[in-house]
Length: 308
Image 1 (spheres, rainbow, N blue to C red):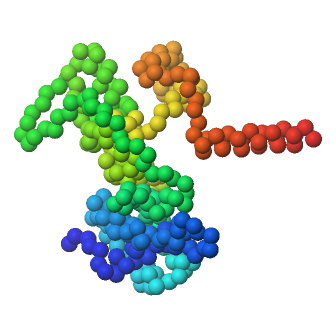
Image 2 (cartoon, rainbow, N blue to C red):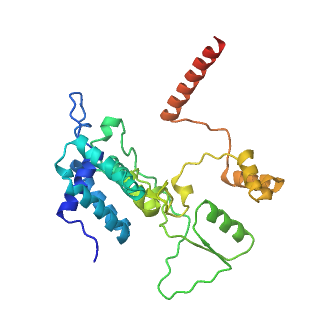
Image 3 (tube, helix red, strand yellow):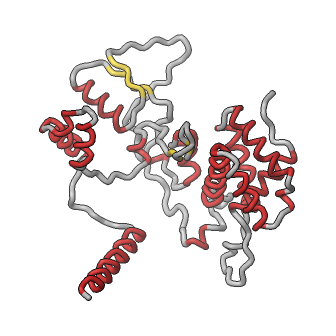
């Protein structure tokens, strides 16, 4: 029997979303930021759709049990503070329950700040000073020809590489340069600059594995992985640092003796040359500039304290 969101579960899910993205009464709310709750933006419906599309049946059943338990204590009829306490107690029942509550929180807030209306706006953006998309994507042609095999089609190669990310892409290039016939298998779609429309939710849905953040098997870590051609190298900005000596020593102590040798340095140099790494550009965004200012101020205060 397939999982369904009945009326009670749907109402409880709405209460959960509105707990994480709550309406807070304030007199100083010129943009309406504090007054908006998740269901005003239809975040509850979007969360439901995401769960149905991405969670396997057994995880949906476990989530349904969690929502049923919340419904038994009348969560949807409780004020904000009581709903927060209910979710905290539910999350403390077991590690799996805690992960489910944390995942619902992350999913609710991610969708709340990313969803756009028909005019491409979000009522929460003004309150946080976010301008939204500022330009159309460039008309950049795609330079890779992809193949979508049909049923019964046979392809042959010397080497098959699964995944086109930073590791698979480099391996494929080197093997191809060595004269091998290489096939790279990628589960995600191929998108480039022409597809980057400055829409956060669209990016998660089209560029990330499983549509965004998801937990590791043991539930200890939330993961975000590229699910597109290029993998993480497509979705992440590149701050390229050579592997620290302490890390290389740790690898060597674990049995990778070559990590401390000159050949490892040669490999690093080749990667840096291929990527065009340099130290000529070091522009910082506003957040990094603020962090640097505070660190400099902290260092000054600390130096004065030591001198006295």
